[in-house]
Amino acid sequence: MAEGSTMLTRRDFGLAAGGLAVLPGLARPALAQRAGGNLVMAQQAQPPTLDAQVTTAQAARNISLHLYETLYARDEAGNPVPDLAEGVDISPDGLTYRFALRDARFHNGKPMTSADVKASLLRYGRVGGSAFIMQPVDAIEAPDARTVVVRMKAPSPGFIAGISSPRAPCAIMPEEEAGKEASKNEAIGTGPYRFVEYRPDSHVQLARFADYVQNRAYQGMDGFAGRKVPNVENITIRFVAEGGARTAGLQAGEMHILEAIAVPAAQRLRSDASLKMHEMMPWSFQTLMLNLAQPPMDNPAFRRALQAALDLEEIMAISTDGLYRMTHGWQHPGTTYFAGDAGKELYNINNKDRAKALLKEANYKGEEIILLGDSSFKNHNDTIVTAAEQLRGIGINVRVNITDWPTAFSQRTQRSGWHVWALMLGIEPYEGPYGVVGFFSGHAPVQHVRDEVIEDCQRRLTTGLKEEERKQAVADFQKRMYDEAIAIKCGDVGIVQATRAQVRDYKPYRIPRMWGVSLG
Image 1: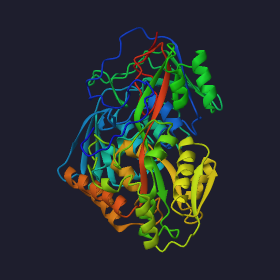
Image 2: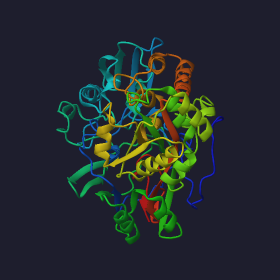
Image 3: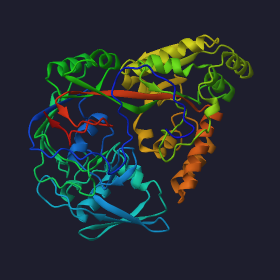
């Protein structure tokens, strides 16, 4: 763990260590064996679309990242690495990116060329779920079949991070499909599995792509890149909303992989020899977002009172059933942009006397504070309920509002009607600093009031050509988040993915990866 992080003991669940500490290129190669078997994976929700470019839904990523690949992807530690590109040459002024393409073949049998890549990137700028990553692009050229040149209007150091993000993947598809409107394209990519059928409210069926071209620059699995070996012949991804039903299906052998299993269930089943539990830490940040447009939250002294009052470890222990990590960073420890001790002295203060003094400084008169949560995610519900009890303990007049997830998400976009909102922030910290800093900056920051220091940090992060400049911007952002109590980070949340014991060579990650595994 990087220097400056704080790791407090969590409860021992007897689960095998997961995590992301695998060095690129050093992962054990997938076993070379005859492809075969029908694997069933269960997930909570069905995808809103199979157009990988347009949706940020986790339920879609679980499927689309088996069908599609990207120029750059993320390795086991979340860093951008080549995937369909062999590499990139960036001009010293940061305005020209020249990508060399590796051999690849689409599911329709067509070899991938630069024309397909150009058309896919242009389409992403029109319909992509993170289309803003293409805004700095001035022109895209395809000088030959194996080369793509991207020319920028201005330097954009986050461009490779953007096109490598799995949030709404910048998927490469045939040129003719890239000419189609959002969600009107056929699901044709270069990935290790090809699309067979989608039955809403039931399942998606995939099949091994016999002509898949493996990336031989890698020895084994490496995040969403690496050498992908499709050992299993058929994959069925079932949509099972109820957690107990997914667990029962795993126990009965009707399902081989669960996207996630509740921690109490994982603890209960850890001694079952027919099952394996795979812990992944970290999965997301648990946060309390603050609405700075709503008095008295517009008063920094009041926000600092909340920051001082909360026992964050109690919140984490209850909301996660014990699977958590106490760390202050707004980037994960061990990653490039982890900002060390910036703001650490203001993390998890848990000092009620200090909080009461700050309430007096803020001239708090007992105004009602609305804590917004939802019943769809246990972490959100329990975080709000626990925080409410702690704040009542220092004399804050709290009202808890628990709704369903869509209602809570919609409410938080309003400048009134809420003061504190519980959110697990997952894919953004995994992606790196751009999404996290961007969450609190721009035309619609989550706190509803722009902070000029954070705006400057975002500007320096997105335009600085030197890595040290960008690192300093992230450190300044993290310090500002604590100094002004813009939001409260509670800690890091882990998850448990589960498999049948017959699933060999499975490694937990942001999605259940079904390449490289086999059925024994």
